[in-house]
Image 1 (spheres, rainbow, N blue to C red):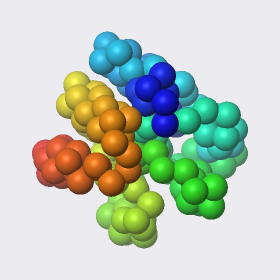
Image 2 (cartoon, helix red, strand yellow; image 1 turned 90 degrees about the vertical axis):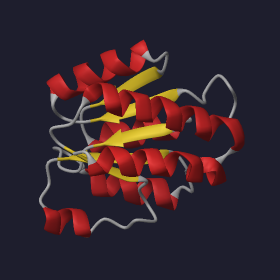
Image 3 (tube, rainbow, N blue to C red; image 1 turned 135 degrees about the vertical axis):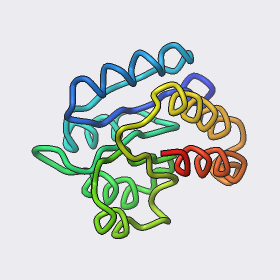
Image 4 (cartoon, rainbow, N blue to C red; image 1 turned 60 degrees about the vertical axis):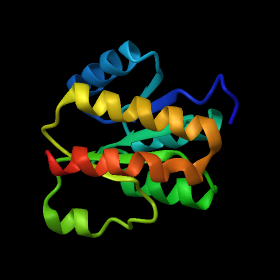
Length: 146
């Protein structure tokens, strides 16, 4: 991934308020942010750009987050995927840990999430996917505080 793309984040959520909060917070961390309002828009953007981090809601109109996860896996993409959801425990347990790097329950602290996303983007851009082991304890800390 080139240095010009390593701080590129995709926010996928049908809630305009959540998208707006995340875009503002991520841009304050000097991240390049694209947004999608549904899974199909996300799939189109993922096929056009290289993203270091994808923030993904599960339940959206047109195409859901599960289909986005399927496409990321099928196409061999390796962004850091953080699922941001208000889903119940049963739904969350269905998520395959091999396809995502963290789950952030709604409501969440926007500033904390922005810090984690910036750290993941930096680590992902520096040395590749295997270096995510450095960022995973940060994600665990964030998830435990939700």
